Image (cartoon, rainbow, N blue to C red; front, side, top):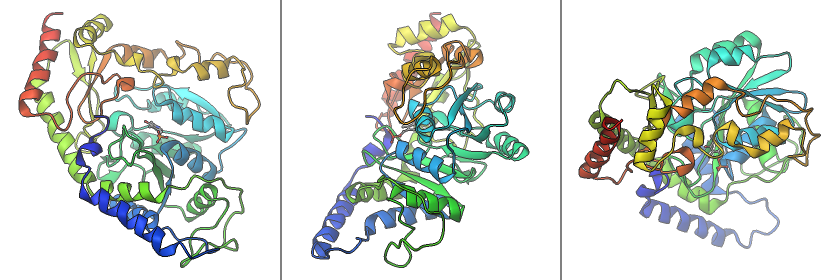
Length: 409
Ligand SMILES: *Cc1c(COP(=O)(O)O)cnc(C)c1O
């Protein structure tokens, strides 16, 4: 089972999809009117209520949300965006398609951006920092916000893996200038393919809206207008399909329940694994605010992590395909000056993306193991663990297996 939201599918999802189909039926003769998409707008409003943001744009994927947010924040050629070297490839791919240059930075033992390293990479071209809230838990937004303010930078939060998580009571995705979410199969809640972005800025909202829907201005009353106020920009079509929005709306109403379940399962698993001198828990900037989808341990020694991973049939976290910069073939090709994106001029040759470029990140990931709790995704290294459907007996069994592997080191 990929993400925990799956386990919560039920009549609400079915009813919303049927409702969306009824809307089609009711409006099929409304030829030549720009159609209102009620269920998409209902999803957006419900996301605003849930997360406490001023504006929401629903889009077709988390990647679409990132590209839309970059366009909305006016990030493009000549700009640099600082992004962690441990993230899903899509965070970096979106920057590539914006025309800006991704500057990869170190993570610390929270598996999110190391603020001190971020600050050391700021140049006169830096336009934004993209914290990625990896594995369900917040980045150090207090430190990153202070850095952004000091240097006049934007913050774009990639919340794809941490939908519903918060930092000291503030929802992730509402702290920076914009926050983007994914609703794909492997995320906290899902509609198979979908995403959305949040922002508190009316201008960012207008630009995001226009970008995701062919330059239209946001809905004013009941219809789009091309004479709205704001920036005139070419858009593309990154709209969320209404059937998917129906599922997303139902899933959002269950988000708190999904999180309560993953958090409780994680607490039980962590208690039973307990502590050991050979490993520590991942650093959490807000233990009560994280999603609880993944339980990660950092060993003192790389060899220990490798031995335990092997015994459990899983991998250490540096082996997370497409989540570790050194495993992204496209990124290395970018560094070699190859044409990895047809929409931009190749970069000048640089060694900044070479394997080994981020020694602290490499070292931490080589010593770490991620156990699945709510998300099962072997790409995250979480090929071993429990799910939200696990019984107490199964949890005890998995904890015992982990402890046995550590005991036999
Ligand atoms: C999943 C993910 C994305 C992309 O989301 P899609 O909906 O698959 O496009 C972006 N960033 C991170 C960190 C992700 O985990």
